[in-house]
Every structure is written in structure tokens, then in C-alpha cells.
Image (cartoon, rainbow, N blue to C red; front, side):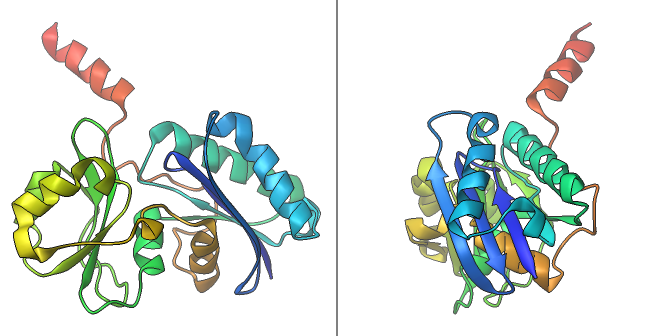
Length: 225
């Protein structure tokens, strides 16, 4: 099976082409432009490096969040458009699941934290083998102490602004993972799709965890009337 996988849930874009479990090509890059401006060209480049065309793909997999609202929408729309063009299934994979999976196995539980802006993070708790142990949360970083009672490996781009906050609130329970584990990898998205750790076949439903900024703004305006 040949899989095209992509993730645009963070400030990093990741695209991979897999044949079964083998990576034929993976491109992960920080964005100088928006996801919408660069994603198609990254996909085209990854396919060319793998020696394939889009029509050769059997399955399209995409990160469905949580993360950047705009990035998630762009990723899903692109994945569904490509899948429709080649009459291929499209599946969504949770980006927190992908972060945890990429860090396995560990000796302690894993807590991916993704920057949700507004001084908040998206997170969930996973076993050392990657099984999800909690719901998906949207919390202030200092409030993670209320759900974390064990030594935990923290990974994800939420560490960039909040490492000090987490260390101060959790003390010895906080273990900071290496930067290589802070961003979702499209290769891992593809593996999880192949293993069936998905939300079903299209249309892909995004995981937002909280309402978008636009929705929150409209809600606040309604309350102030």
C-alpha cells in the first residue's frame, strides 16, 4: 500500500510518502509562507522524490488536530481534494496521538502539549506504550498539575513558550523531551492510518477541542449585548 500523509496542525508542515511501513520520502519544514501557499508544492516534491505520481497513491492520511484552526482546515481540505481526484480513501489521525506514538516506548507516561495560544495548551495523557489514558484537554499550562500525578515525559511545541511554567508547577514530575519530538511527523500520521488508529474514512472530522477565535468573539459579542 502506498500512502500520502500530511500534517499542517502547527507552524511546521510535514509531508511523507510511505510504502507499507517504509518511508519513501519525508519532508518536514518550517514555513516561510502560509500552509495554503506551500503545501501543494511540498506534496509534489515529496511524490517526485519518491518516484511516484498522485495516481499511484492508495490512501491519503492527514493530521486532524488539535492545533492551528487554519492549518487543520487547510490540511484536511487538501487531503480530501487529492483523495477525491484519485478516488482514494482519506483518513484523519489525531496529532496528539501521533506525537505520543513517535515518542514510544518510554519508561514513564507521555504528555504531548501543543500550543493553543491564549496562554493555553492542548494535551492528553498516554501510557509509556502510547495508549491514550485521558480525554483531549484544553488547559492553561499551570493547570496540568491537576491531571498529572506521575513522572511524565512532556513533548510538543507547547514546550517552547511554557517549559518554565510546567517545570515550576509540576516540579520533579516534569521531564522535558528532546526538541526532535516537539512536532508531528507525517510519517507517523501514515503509520497510524495504516494501523487503523483513525476516525474512520472521510469526511475527516477535525479535532478542535475548543471553539475557534471567531466563534469565541461572536459568543462574547452576544453576551455583551
